[in-house]
Length: 101
Image (cartoon, rainbow, N blue to C red; front, top):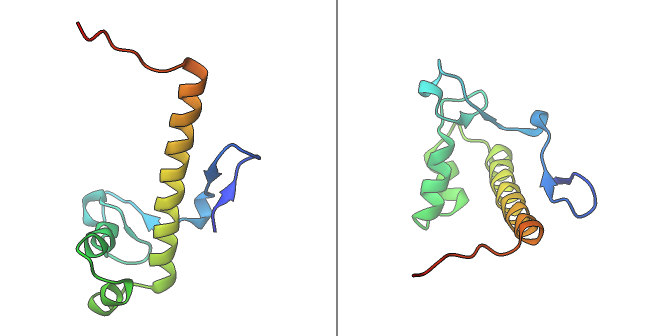
């Protein structure tokens, strides 16, 4: 599961927790699930199209439920981290103002 770096600093993930691998020699460097040639993008494409995780797993026999769930957790943590950094940078620098003239 995701971990907190320090109280209130937002989530971070240890490298060894990653189930995603990118190597120029495998699928031209496109992120895949470790020990497979299955693109991580496929998982998100299936979910975005309205398919369940079970349908994804049925259609991709090399997919592992644990890896798929972990990839989703990693995506959630990255979004939370990005939102946290955006929120805290806004607090430190103040709101962005634009000259509308």
